[in-house]
Every structure is written in structure tokens, then in C-alpha cells.
Image (cartoon, rainbow over all chains, first blue to last red; front, side):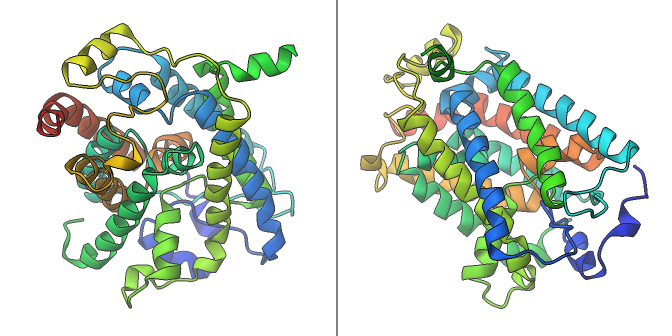
Length: 169
Length: 191
């Protein structure tokens, strides 16, 4: 979309950008270990929302894929609307981070992995009833068997890294 | 206490969705971080089992925030379940319940059906399919797609990225196909 973001990427992040790296850390000033505590706190609040809205529930995911309830569509839809408005405000008014850095969000580049990988993840989503975030929340909720699911997801990510050069992109 | 009572009830989508959406600006304002979760799995690989694979050779310490974030999600799940738990049984649609009963699911009391997601099932065929195969597809698929529901469906769409729309449509396509074509077969297999 706008190219005003990409030219502000830190140089050492180019390799990462080519990898389709999501969740990248664009902060230039190095952070102390303790500063990570704030992301832990955001995560705690986020995990509480996950459980209280029951979106970590296998049943809710089944409802969604069976078109029997609006709940999940309402959650994802309203999350996107709020996210979209926030990102547009941040860009329009050139709002800085709390440390005074320019906020930059790297653009996503298309590759066929978004289709092939997307479909494979969709299948796993319906089987496990969880995307990666809810996996962590389910474990916290006491479903300890999900530790196996998480370990297998890590193995899946590792296998992707191994096979990456041979896969169509 | 009224507030606590309100918190204990399941939160409707119009409360939960906007709160999840607010995570996007909060992470950007706190430290220029793009909201995404599946990348944590990659950082774990990079930190623990890089095995000289180029995909895992990067400075994962710079992305450690993401590991703190998912540790927080785990703790949040604990807090919500053990201190703010809904005292009532989860309400799911009758139609879904009926379909699942015909597929052999009998327990509708918790967030997850104990018929499948119990520790006792880890070393059974159920465990192999629902934990090992399912988890593998989640990890492999999200990384192949370059993100999951948070990175693509929420962060990507919020930033008007069309590749994220392609990914989101693919997630849904895979999920619909699995629920209606594959799951009946898989649940029959483990009945």
C-alpha cells in the first residue's frame, strides 16, 4: 500500500523482511531485558480476553466452521476494524512510539506459501481448535495435553525451515 | 461484587474483539512491534534447535519480546480459568452440538471436549491425530503462510495488506474443508 513505511526499515532487517517475517521488532534503540516485562503484561491481558471470550474453545471454532454462530466472526471482524482504525490514525498523524521512534509496519509480500501454507494451517486449526495464540492460552487453562500440540507445532515450524528451499513459494 | 460477576461471565464478541484489536496499536506504541504470535514458534526453533538451517539463523534475542508475549498469554489463560472462571457450562449453538454428538463427542462441559483433549489420550490414536498431526499442521502451515490469524488476519488486514487477505481466505478454506470433509472421517476413526 503506502511505500512510506518500507523505506524506514532498519537495514539489518532486510533479510528478515525477505523471509516474510511477521511480528518483527522495528525498534531501533536496544531494549533492556526488563523492558520485556511490558510485553508479558500485554500478553497476560490478551490471554484473559482469549479465555473469557471462549475463542480458545474447540467448540467455538467448530461453531465458526459450521456457520452456526456469529461469535468468532464478530470477534475477528471487530478486532480488524479497531486495528485498522488505529493503524490509520497512527499513520495519518505520524504518531511515535513511547520512546519517540517513528512507527513503521513492514509491508507483506505475496508468495504462494500464503495459499498452500494457509490451507494447511486451516486444516490444523479445525483439528486442534486453536491457532498459535490460543495454544498457549489452552495450556495456561490447564489443558496440559496441549503441550504435546505445542511441541508438535514447534516441530512443524522447524520442518518448514528445513524444507523451505524445496517448497513452492 | 457486580464487576467481578460481570467479568466472570463469558465476554461477548463486541467486548473481546475490540480489546484484541487494541493490541495492535498498544504493541506499536510500546515499542514498534507488529502484532503476531506464530513467529514465537520460529524464535523457539532459532533459540533451541537452529541446526544450521538458514531460516533459523537470525538474532532471535531481538525478537525476545514475542516470547514474553506468549508467556503472558499462557499466564493470562491461567488467571482467567482459575480466578475469573465462568461458573456455568459453555453455551454453544444447538446445531453444532447436534452435529458433534453424531460424530461421537459426548462431553460439552468445558472449553474443550474431554473426549479428545485429555492427558490420557496423549499416547493413543486420538492423541496422534488431534495433538501431533494437528499441531504439526498449525506450526508448518502458519510458517509456510508467513503468519497466522494474528499476523495476517488481524495485523495484516489492519494494515490493508492484500497478501494477508489471501492468507486469511486460505485459512478459512482449509478450516471449512477440514471440518466438513476430514473431521467426520477422523472422528469415526477414533470412535
